[in-house]
Length: 311
Image (cartoon, rainbow, N blue to C red; front, side):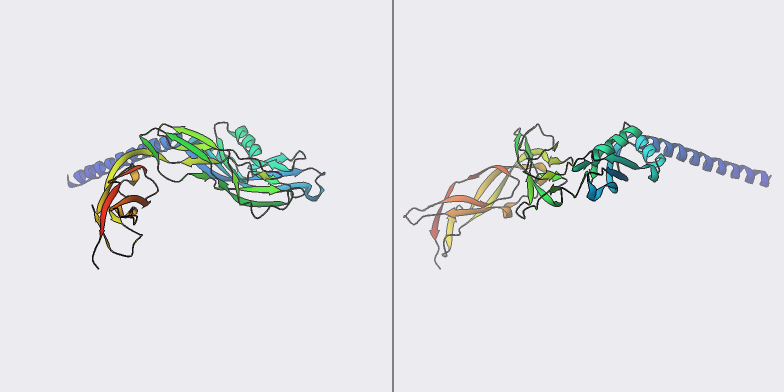
């Protein structure tokens, strides 16, 4: 009787454990399927074999170049591409066609599409190969940003604009002047209804200089703005004497991105009283220091009374 009861308890316990494991496996399978069905990014290395024609005698033959490739696609598609395409098969062949610049990115895009059309190539580094016989000089330079942003009153730019990547390789058949430290983008006029900017840019042409054909994006953070009011003490940088101001502080109103609302305080401003020695007792207020990310700044009063305190 005791043994029969013990057997039933063990059976019940084993059934609970089995049920738990079964539920766990089902939940894991569902989670994995959902994850693989979403869009992901992945970085891989692809070897590019460049077939240089004999007309380029200094580099004729095959040049092997390793490229870093950023891919984007559904998890299922990326998994199939990454796990079933062995490293020895991740080789791209391309020919220069007597050109001084070989577009590795274009060849890799064609290669990836031939394996899986659902995967897109986000970035290739390096994206081209320069034949040193004619493009013997090269260097990395920064990007000079040029844009005009038109926003509705409800929104503001909330951080510095930047480019991704933030530098590119330029090449030339002649020595590149030390004064060339950046390349200029074609100016953009951008309208936004509150969405942050992520837009591909193009570059101004430079005489006898080739710019690496890497897709480059301008990124600008935009967010909703709000108004803020603070009081700032009045100071003066004109006089060595101690001055008394009435009122002793002014009220500032301005527009600020919501994410920076708590970070902007009175210490970020300087309200300077500018007076003249013409007998007037009024000093005009000027704001000589303010935080970067504010707009529509107004202050009251615009002028204050002052008098010299006794030493």
